[in-house]
Length: 405
Image (cartoon, rainbow, N blue to C red; front, side, top):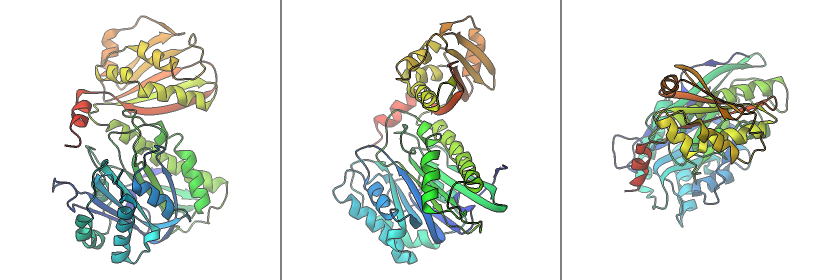
């Protein structure tokens, strides 16, 4: 199946418009902080959310609004997470009602998300003052929406692709924000995906719930799981393909396109972790099952010692073995091979669980690239998995030391 990346982000699929503006939640007037994505027609909707017991009010409201499997708009603010506020749900519902007032879209068909500082009151006034501007500016503005959901992100994260379902050309697009409080088990951070594929809500939810197991759930920046993680997908059916209402070739084609985009976004999220200087990919092969492979690579990618070694370009492979050993996976440690790979080459550092001679100079060169792969062969089976993270730098501590103030 051919999947072709295109421009346009969430506006690439037919019938979707977006926009982002600065409304005043954030003090920096140069940073947009209010975003809106709208479908021309009511769309099938699916979502996955944080598993943190402390949840942002927007998560609760969005789950309620998407319970019937449909939505038409997504409204988002950055700069304030609307979490641990006594009136948080009322605020989130009010954001949806603002959209209804300017667009006529029922508030129950609006998903809502917030990101930023936890535990601070969120004033609705800035959003009320700018909702008209936000709505009137809707258009081919995925860039603006992608910027408006950023917090300490250094780059906008978006993707779009074209593919075929049953001989019909279809499109899918997405935007995401990440940086800190990024750890597996949900669909990390805020991710909004649009598609013009015709698919039932049940099959859309099935596709998304399965997809995150190999995409967003395999990302970790710092081991902290956010209170506001939300991934929402809208599918408006305007591509005109035969409705996907069960398993089959068409469903598999859609899942492949979805995974293409979610994996690309996952890598963007990991590479732009707070203070990060490099993307660290951990690929596990030779596992006895997918779950074993996932457990091992997530443990390695979350290890603070491994992450620190990556920052220092230090081939301290013993830290990799250590992370495998406490991962909880039942592995034969006397079969493990480890290698580091990048554009600068490959250096094998461990065979059968023991160290081997290698060139420190080559290792330093390999690990000094901005994208590094830790390849682990468990040599026990045929299964594999991949996880993505980043290095741990001085800047991570500096950013989070005064994040609120």
